[in-house]
Image (cartoon, rainbow, N blue to C red):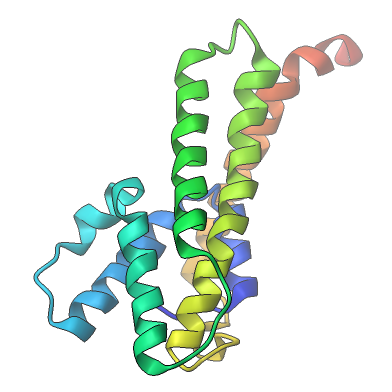
Length: 173
C-alpha cells in the first residue's frame, strides 16, 4: 500500500497511531489481492503485533523477487516495533495515573513517536517494491485524512493536559 513518507508521518503521528490499523489493513488487503491469498486482512490489522513480522517478510521477499534493492532490516524493525507496542501497553496498564502521571502519560506519547519512525522504513520499502519510491500516487491528504488528524490532535491535547495537569495546576491558581 503506497503512501508518501510525509503523509505516513502526519497520519501516524497526528492520529496517535490509530492510522496503523488502517495501514496494516490496506497492506494486508493488497497482499491478499496480489497473491490471491486466503487471508483475512481485518484480523491481521486488528492484531497487527502478531503479523508485523509476516508483513515485513512479505515486503522483503517481494523486493528480492523483483530484484529491487532497499537497505533495511525487516526482522529487527519488526521485533523492536512489536516489543515497543507491547511494552508501552504494559506500562499503560501496570502504572496507574495516580502513581505516576508523568510516566503513565509520557510512555505512550513517546511510543507514538518511536513506533511511527520504526514503521517508516517499512513504508519506504513498500513504496520501492511498488515502483513508487516517493509515494507520489498517494501523497495528497484527503478530507477524511484531515478529519482523522483533527480528532487525533484533540487526543494529543487531552493526553498532554492529562499528563501535565498536576504540574500546571499550581500555575493556574
